Image 1 (cartoon, rainbow, N blue to C red):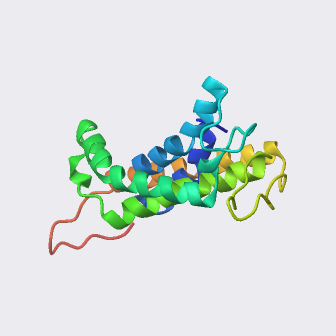
Image 2: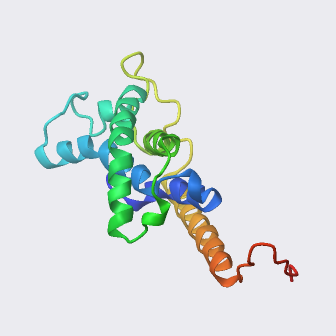
Length: 180
């Protein structure tokens, strides 16, 4: 699934469940970085540190996903802060480093997991083994539906929380208000 929005589904669900617990920008950065290798292979027809004839090479291994997670984590915080400033959301700065690192590795490992189910050329255990126990675990349609459902659920949760937060009147310090 090079550069498809499907990979964002699990991240959007986590964002809906724990809004402050995920940097969606860092999660998205990890999704893009891990698919640079397949994009290169698609555009050039040449292998890039991968197995000849494979679209998904070293970037789609546990080792590659870990390295890419480190890169996404290292650049994630400054890019997230820049993005929040550009969007006029500076009140959310600073994003904690723990959230950035979780977002980066959740991004790369969830991407690897989804692609390992879908693509026969993903070999997550290289260089130790070329075995992929996940390929074909569920059909592609089911996998896509899972990604769409998690994305929609996450967006509904996030928007619902925002609507509740903005619609409810704020009590002043020391003031009590009835719940309903």
